[in-house]
Amino acid sequence: MIRHLFKLIWNKKKQNFLLIVEMLVSFMVMFAVFTLLVYYYTNYKRPMGFVYENVWTVSYSNNRLDTKNEDTLAMYYESLKRTVEALPEVRAVSYVGSNSPFSANNSNNSTTVNNVQIMANTYQMDDDYARLVQLHMLSGRWFSKLDDGAKDKPIVINATLKEKAYGNKNAIGQRFEIEGKQVVIIGVVQDLKDKGDYVAPQYSHYKRVERNSYASTGRMLVAIRPEAGAAFESKLNKVLTGIMPTANVEIEHLTKKRIAKNSITLVPMIILLIVAGFLIVNVALGLFGVLWYNISRRKAEIGLRRAIGASGNNIVLQIVSETLVLASLSLLLGSFFAIQFPLLNIFDLPAGVYLTALVLSILFIYGLVIICAIYPGKQASNILPAVALHED
Image (cartoon, rainbow, N blue to C red):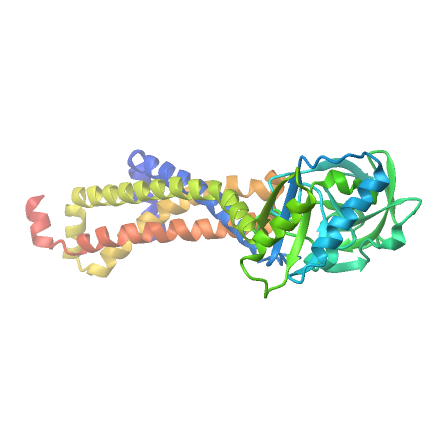
């Protein structure tokens, strides 16, 4: 049976060539779509690693002060922090760098960690950050007053960086250089999805904000108690502008920033889905039309088969089988190209993402082909032998 199907396809190779190419292109597009979908879904299923509900970002700029003395500035911003923390609606406050969770800012540098060259994100956080967002420390500890006056600057790395640089070895106490300065690892923290739900964990290390650096951060996180009302945002803004009358103060909610960040991340996927949707519709219509045209030209053949005893289901099975063989030829060629992605580590995605996308793409194309072939097959099975042979 299969040998007979290949013989029929070979005899009409010129007519079937374009159909095979069309299904091949559709397969590659769907492979790209499913790769992104599987990749995004895998990242979405990872734990957030921190708490962002009821946490606000307070940005302030152009805060003109009469002094440039570092100790005076440190006392001023420590007083600002204590004033905000003293509000009954506030749970915790932390000074952070500009690349706070879900922000559009990035800060990274190339670092050699344990003889491994790594491009890592650099974050600045103070001692209260871990408590504010409820970080999960995998080993070691977060920054504290124990680090005051330390010879080597303390640093915390995330699990992805630790695995890349040290594997299964203990990273606590290890030293390396960042921008020419010696640092020592005091903790390993669980990966944070602070770039959005659909972004994979990136190599990251966290530096401690020193007292004399509070003025340069320009941003703080404020954790609000759940019972705080909607009017508290206005109250907080008045408190901040009262202390910093010349500053431009902006308050943003991390929940809203997360939604905005996710929306930006999903834009390429939405565009690709729209393009793929149009392509699949065109392929389905083209396949449907080609099968319909072929059946109209093969009435005599189908009528003869019916005359010698073939049932309607046999005719449907033949039409569907011929189409599946065509699809298999295109999928074999497409799978050869698709399998190169995990083998060559293209785009640096996990091999499991590519393999899952490959299987889903194959199943999708087979399902599409079967759906498009069943109705023309049903129409072919209704051809009466006498009518078909009389027309011939």
